Picture (cartoon, protein in one colour):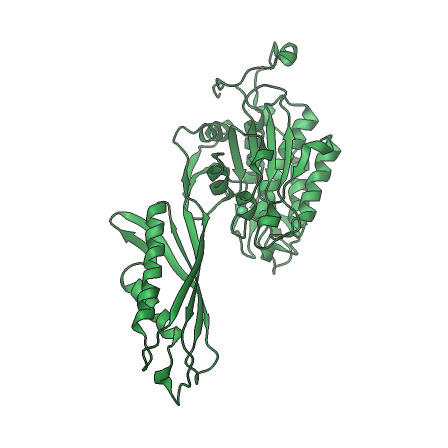
Length: 418
Ligand SMILES: [Zn+2]
């Protein structure tokens, strides 16, 4: 059984009720499995890709209101107005005052799905759920997380479970560059001391670190000329881009990048340009990214990419000495983070995982998570699994047992003060 954190005290008003606290039994993390399953089935069926989360937010809101949540405790912010894709609604926040004293805990899960999940028809097949429409994904990423978090609030209402102050947080637009978490009005979350993000596969996997990513657009401007009549008067943007990419590959700055014991990745993922073979191409647009857990090294990868394009632009000249130009437009998508080994959220998550009989595993992610931005906002956040499998594909499914364990873990995290 977990140790009582030093900060948690029983509120004097509740002293009477807790003078003879019932021993915490396994049943304290039991929950209404039928209700939780209905929630996840309903939520996965709601179309809601990034920027289209209004119906998901109103589903959550109506369930909370039916359970007795006061309207004033349910708030939303304007993150969508700061996001490049705009969107219907902002992040949804529900704060529950504590019946026990202690640091506030946050449970969160993003509301959007990737577009392939729009039209999902969730259907149970034995121990898993899949979409009955083979052309769609299921949307367990991340409606399973949404259901875990919502179920926790509903279970606490229904059983009047004692709990420290809580905040439930459902951000928008995770799948399009973590926009909801990035642009969140952090003040609404009321300074949680512990934070848990449900978004992932197996329930025992705790993601405690994730890489940082930088995304850039590269515009190569050449000089157009007739490819048959006067090719020497042109400057080919395609030639410049090709030379630059060739150099990145030759010098080890593309794909897996390893230099002096530091590692990262780089990828040119999009190349667009050219209209016809009889014209020297005057414009190419490229999209590239760099990732590394080491922010300084990530910066070096970005510099190497830029230098390769600048050098290539200097190398390709027309007969009259004209050269092309390159322009870069990029930004940090998300900063890398690594939670401390003794981070209180990590330790609490490990206790919760053990409480359901599983062995916690600490994992590092090579992709960005909402937790990257929450941690950057000063709220160190651990991410937990909730039964997702084969995400972002038409064979996506929900592992029902893992989903149910995540519900138990979440309930433990929200209510355990011992
Ligand atoms: Zn997700």
